[in-house]
Image (cartoon, rainbow, N blue to C red; front, side, top):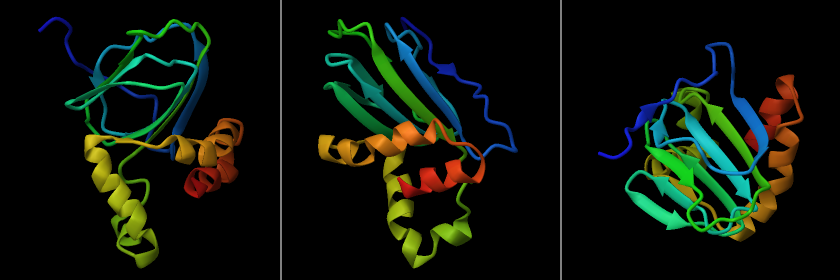
Length: 154
């Protein structure tokens, strides 16, 4: 094996609902990794980069939004991307953020199904990305209870 797969130790503590990282970078340098948290990853301005999620590899467009389930191997590589102002917003949250009792309620059925499909990774359409893009920008600027409400509004 050329590069090992790393287990990422996230900064999420038992007292955190989620962590948000809003950053600009010139390249993808984080190796293939996994962690026990769910991850929402938004990327813009990286057309031609390569996404690896589980056993799926794909070249991305200029906008990217994925939901990755717990312990799913994933990374992004520069591949054909030549842009040097990549915008990335990463949201990590524990698998038990929304309890099983709540997930079993009718109103949460779509969320439960989304989480189940995330075990293989979900890449969202451009139209979905455009619908939630402003909310993603807002989440990184909010704090406290407002931030969790904004996350749930996604």
